[in-house]
Image 1 (cartoon, one colour):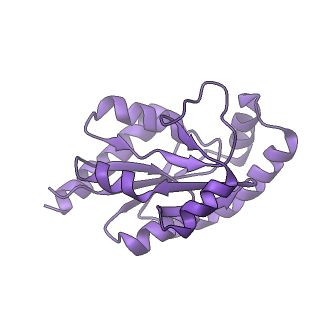
Image 2 (image 1 turned 45 degrees about the vertical axis):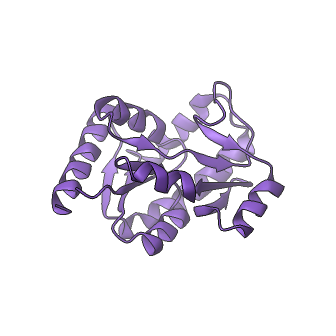
Length: 187
């Protein structure tokens, strides 16, 4: 069976982290590609586990070196998937990428057999409630993320699959079924 990149996208606050955590518990063969970012760590985030935290200057150097499988800028910060890490993990099993639509398009061009899945919120009101519920996001960032969310949700139409996160457990099961079906198709 050929291992695949599984791209997961969705607006900030849609619950991607929760869903991915459930999936990783249920499928230990899945690995998660850790992204690099220029944003500061949130409380409880660990270097190399949640993100690689780098300066904007270092991130630009990595872009110039071709070190990213994909990268994007949003919410005044850069995010990107270190290419070497993703390829190394892909040799051992399916790899999950939690990335934005612009990055997903970059992955689609360089790895056309990747499976792209977009997670939708049950409603915009629920998405805003979740963002505010974090308690760690300033008002200007919430407004910026809500504006970005509208654009991101418009991008869902070119993804392979769209899943609504109205219940994290159910959403994780649906995505795991998609992953299993895509593995069977590549056999």
